[in-house]
Amino acid sequence: MMHKKHIFTKISDFHQIGGLAKPAHPLVSLVDYGLVDYQTDEDQISWIQHFYSIGLKKCMPQGKFRYGQQQYDFDEGLLSFIGPGQSMTLEIDKNPVMKPTGWLLLIHPDFIWNTTLAKNIKQYDFFGYGVNEALFLSEKEEGIITDILLNIQREYYSNIDQFSQNIIIAQIELLLNYSERFYQRQFLTRKKSTHQILERLEKILDDYFESSVLTDQGLPTAQYIASRLNISPNYLGSLLKSLTGETTQQHIHHKLIEKAKEKLSTTALSVSEIAYDLGFEHPQSFSKLFKRKTKLSPLEFRQSFN
Image (cartoon, rainbow, N blue to C red; front, side):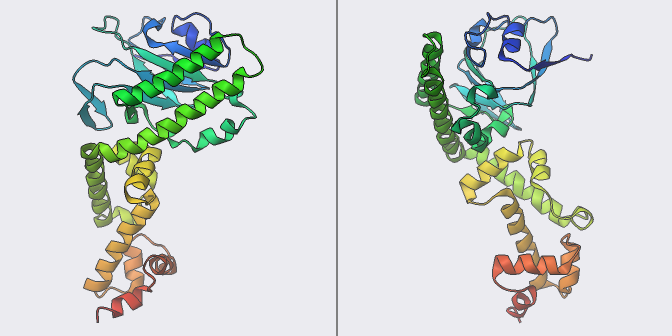
């Protein structure tokens, strides 16, 4: 069955399909999840939105929650970030055992236009994460985020004046900075899930470097690795940066150099043959990368074993 893809260009478009009253401000809105009643008879709704949304779900069904390809027990708040142009699909339960509660902050790009946040918001990588890479909040963290959201609500429900926009934007920036801190905490504290991702990453790279795909298609891209892990490239990059200090590309190059050292020290293959086996069309490109990473040329490295 084909489902209609809705296009939400204005925040009021979401209010309308969510069965909500018109927003108090056309460019920013804080929605109470408990009031959302999607106006559709379909079992799911899909849309593309042209504004930012930050969702805090405070009440989730008990049990396992799927996060990427892993499952976790987590009873606290869940914070997710959606940027303009992202496609969303939501399955609708017409007879839910319990309705999720929480808040949804909607921010149109026009609201932050010509402010420092318009430029800085692109630096928050988590707007590029998928919803299955949401931020799990402790009770204390949830309280901090909720307080900021309620500050925003109080401000735009009060009399709008010349200070209102700057005050709301300052609160949004505060929320984003706290979220960035909490994501770093999540990378470090959810060790079981993090280690599972890293173990799968190493297995994917090992299999790739042992296959003919490397010779045929060259080095794997961050997009390829992320797709195999069922996470977004941005999330993978942030995770690796937090845990290893390396970007995804640097991590791939690190694995490449390991394989190159193995071939140089255990085989009689020429440098050109090794470069070809490792997916390089031009041996000089391989030699240049190897020297940059090891301070030795491939031949100098090989000679060190003789």
